[in-house]
Length: 148
Image (cartoon, rainbow, N blue to C red):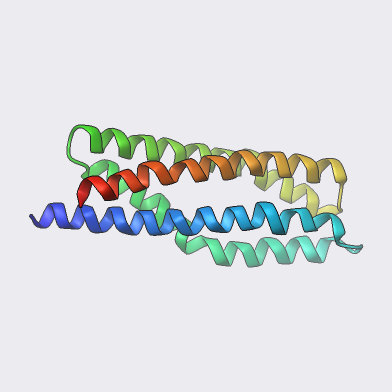
């Protein structure tokens, strides 16, 4: 009983962190990133401030999301819950890969100066990342429902 309750609590915490990140990512994608094109020179202080501020906002919920995704795989009972947790973890891996190899390098290049082509690439990369993050809600919600 205690293990089931702790799994349910972990699944709920994971869903909350994932939900927060999905909302944040859609806000960034729809509102914040498009505004990059409207920033006048000097562009560097804006981009550096964006990266510092957004990092402070997402580090804790994203950390909770990633750690809880790993623990859910380890703690899930065999069967459909474990498979659901593995799907969620695979999506976490995809988001991390797109961030590390797509979004982060583009931000690094945009620090130097605004470049319309780089900005359009960032918007495309970020759309893929945001859609994958949104897809993460399905396994996160499924684990909460199955553990209730």
